[in-house]
Image 1 (cartoon, rainbow, N blue to C red):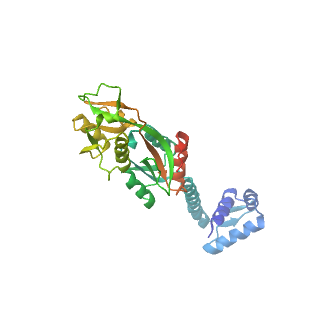
Image 2 (image 1 turned 135 degrees about the horizontal axis):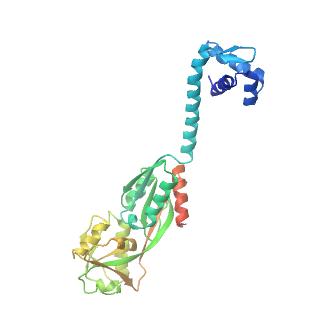
Image 3 (image 1 turned 60 degrees about the horizontal axis):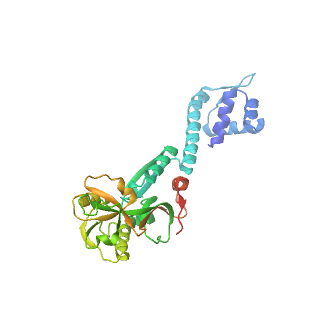
Length: 299
């Protein structure tokens, strides 16, 4: 039994006339009569009884009508579900992000816009460092990832620019230079730097260490912090000083001040990483929203 047989049966049952049903379906009356007879043969029952004005349903036809309507509705819903999934309007999207990425206002704005545009897609968020997230992206554990990049972009993926953030100094409020508006980085030579472990955040670690070396000194590696918010808290506790992306300055902790770096343009890039080409329609839709808010980043 094919779906067209169900459609033919319903048309005849609703019109109660084979000729009118054929006109409604856009086919000839003889082929329609043949298809109805073939359906009756397959079911081994008579579905219609002819009258002087057309046809009426038999008792078997009345019973079949209930399930035929349900079957056609289910088929229509299955088609609609498949088309919706094909357009990326349903399913699940796995998003990875670094701890510092979450502080940039573009990231929650992008996620919020996607949720508003595709409410049928369930979002799963997972945090990790850039190296982990890129591996998860390759293996398919995440579909897209907000990552921090240094001067070079890793090969084999596409990166969509989110922001090139300035790095700012974070100092204890009691530090002798805390009241300065701008400080040269070399003024902090010999001070302990609170950093994330390199294996947890290689890009951020290398940007900070590289900036110190460019300023002419090797940083003193002080207390390590488990996450970026902890860096600010440890500085507040006077374990040392640090450099953080500008968006992290949104963390208002008593006992710290944020100060511009003088004489150097220290930046770290935030980008949205994805496989190329997009693996699913959901990913393509998320990237389209990213392009609305940002610009492509050359690899």
